Image (cartoon, rainbow, N blue to C red; front, side, top):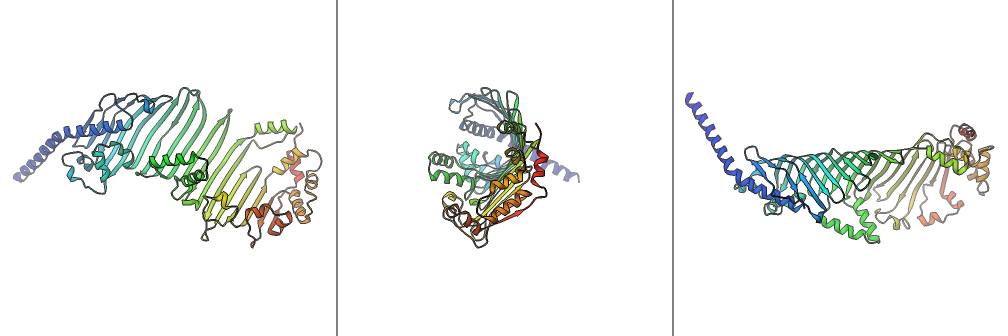
Amino acid sequence: MKRTHILLLCILLLLAILAGAGHFLLKPSLEREFADRVNAYFTQQGLVPEKPIETTVSPLTRTLTIHPFTIRSNPALRIKKGTFEEAQLTLTWQGLLAFSPFESLVPKTGQIPLLAKGRANGLTLSVEDAEIAIHNTTASKASIDALDLETLKGGKADILRTALSVEAIHLDTMTITVPAQDKLVITLGPIEVTHATKDKVGMCVIENLDVTENAEKRLSLKKITQKNIRLYTEEEWTSFAQTISRTSPAAAEAVFDLLMGETPLVESTVLEDITVHVENTPLNIGSITFNTKKNAEQSLFSIARVTLPTKDIEKELEEQTGQTVPLPPVLHLTFSLSSNKDADKNYRLAGNIDIEELLSIDASLNAGISTLKNLEKEIQTCPLKNLRLRVTDKSLLSRAALVIHSNGSAKDFLKKEVAGTGLPKLEAKLHSFIDKPGSIELATKPEKSFTAPQLASMSEEQIFQSFTLTVTQGSEDLDEQVARYKVTK
């Protein structure tokens, strides 16, 4: 047993000696190699160090430390100065060997794991118009294609900006200060980026975006979430900028392709809990959503629950009409637009505006078009069917009647206003709506189909030959509503 123990001890001692020897033999060459790469990378990004950046490498722990350095002035990028705080990176064994004399052990094809994890304490930049500070950035599981790795080793460190695939990036906070603009300060963070590749980002989440001016809050945004973000190349962005700089159909098509084309820039964007301060009045928006699939085959744009105080609106109405119109303390507005392509390659287009306390409007139609890219042109010739427009009154008519006709019966006044159409059936339905405001819906008859110009040129009689008008009465008489809202000055 003693011999076995001695033998194991000798093997362990030998391994320790080999590891130690490897550490001290590899350490100088790795530090030179990584120092060259780190200096090249920052220089190629325009963050030129005042003196060469120093690095420390521990082969045993696979740790690369980038020591703090000062960034010198770079007029081309409007950089006055900057500082980079210490960063520590834990490399994979393949990432370490790729820059060592044993680089032949690293595969020449496929994705090469480069980084296990990393942390950068911070970066501050002073540019001509602003101060930028980034605090505490971490990253995990970064890899690079073998061919791009060879390019990197060949001296083009700038390729790291576009070639790395990273599983997750976390940034604590970022602050942008613009002293010349009434002390404008923008803060945001934390920021989370996941599944980032050279041409796509799986998800980006930005929290707590705040904008202040002279220490007064102007904008706050709780959260921004974006999914499936396409990363355009520099050449693609240049081509796009050149196209939209010219006023032409091509410019509109380029914007459509960017936002809703075959490969949209972002498939899903959600902004949550937004507050805008306008003249000391806060305007709150519950959320703004934009989702789209390729060529807008399924898309949604919505603004949910805009909270708008009505004090100033009431005051302006009173000044214009001489009438006091009581409005709810706040209005809550929701708006949406959507498109869906069906199996017959028709688009179902729909829209909704809802002011909870006043009214809602719903509209939809089927358009026989293959793409929304040239909607403005195609809508003139494509067949339209299944048109539907529904308006639901929630007190708007009674409040408006109070302004227009403050004395006598509002019902009688409004009925006189709609008289004389020559269409008795229409007048009867409108009278029914006026008596007890509820909802009124205009919809095409099932067999009817027409183009936009045909619809625009229809006479009233033709409209009612092609459409049905449905009125659903509410529960309260119009004059009773008016009496309830009427206020004696």
